[in-house]
Picture 1 (cartoon, rainbow, N blue to C red):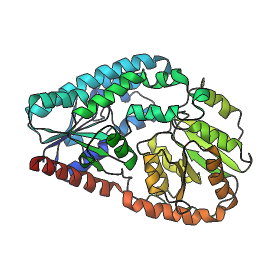
Picture 2: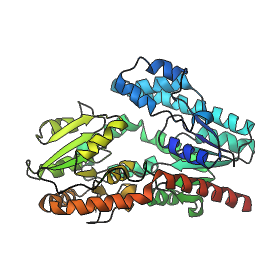
Picture 3: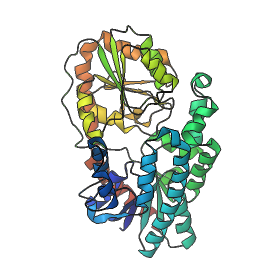
Picture 4: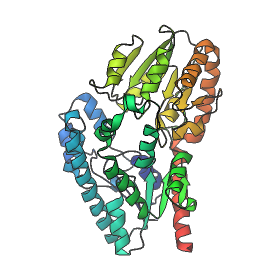
Amino acid sequence: MKIIVAHPFKQHSFNTAIGFAKHEDLFRYITTVYLRRGNITDLIYRHASKQNRARAESHSSNTLNPYTTQFCEIEGLFYTALLRLPKLKKLARIVKKHLVTRFGKKVAKYSIKNSVDAVLMYDCTAKDCFKRIRKSKSGIVCVLDMSACTVPSRIRDYENDPLFEKYFGTQEVINNWGRPSEYSQLYLDELIYADFFIVASERVKEDLKFRGIDSNKIYIIPYGVKDGVNSKEKPIIGKPLKLLCASGLSFQKGVHHLLNAVKKLPADAVELSIVGDFDSKSPLFYECEQMNNTYLLGRVPSIQMNEIYSKNDVLIMPSLNDGYGLVVIEAMSHGLPVIVSNHAGSCSAVTNAYNGFVYDAYDENELKNDILYLINNSEVIPEMSKNAINTCREYSLEKYYDRIDAILRKALAAREES
């Protein structure tokens, strides 16, 4: 096979491309920002802080170096810089739209010129590429990797939140997504041009079926984590129970429900650490400031997450809508039992009272009771920790590499038979 994996940013495209490279099916990996000696990205990040350099180094792979082509590198770097400036969100959306369009057209032209078998791109980035490929009648198979549910589904889940009016409001959605109608249509248009779909969870598959996609064109491949298992099980713990949330301070990630649940627990019995971006002007930030047992750690380089996992007892994923939530599997591989909302795709990996708990995304009392159970029965955590690690043996990167390659071969064979 001759496969192109293309993403104007990164997401999990690295692992997808590495999987095809290991099976000798990758033709090119195409992206914008990619760190290798002597390129523009390298020259800029030589003068960056140690933390930013570490982030840049995550955009590099010895396996992918021989396969990588960069398009729109300067635009990609400019967009990355804008993301660090909250006051320029509107400009960042404009730049992103321009970047995605230009990148997609270049990928289409390159794919057609090289007569590849398939192009795999990612949700909300593929429309312009796939549209041009279809128009060319080149026979190239367009595969859309859906990392999340469509925007209309996400907005629906936000609006169904009983606390929507208090925490969200129309302006909150617009601030984060642009105007919902604009992004909703982009997602729905994109579906038209894809021949097959790869999703990480049953939740995203059901969303696509609701949008009229034939289930035979949808393949579920859960994401993988490095080495499958990264830690020993947790020992018997003392108090307070240390909770970790790696979703940032976000309404969309359901953190408002988590904060409300923690407030209902004895303050000395639990400690909550939140990793990820936060806005100091958000009402959620103000709520955290009033809680003596809650700590905002901000954005943390992936290389430092191992230490954070080791210092905590339980991961909580309170998302209102998440196509998967790889952090759940990562935390389990480090021996953390997990408490996951039923709106996160990775909840399928969780069995109640075995390796964690699944709760109703809107039910703060159910979330509180799951935390309280672990506070009052901390002796079960070592066994749940062991079970979490064992669960992750099915979610290694090597198994992901094998699955993604086998599935695309199956999809291409099905196309030839039709």
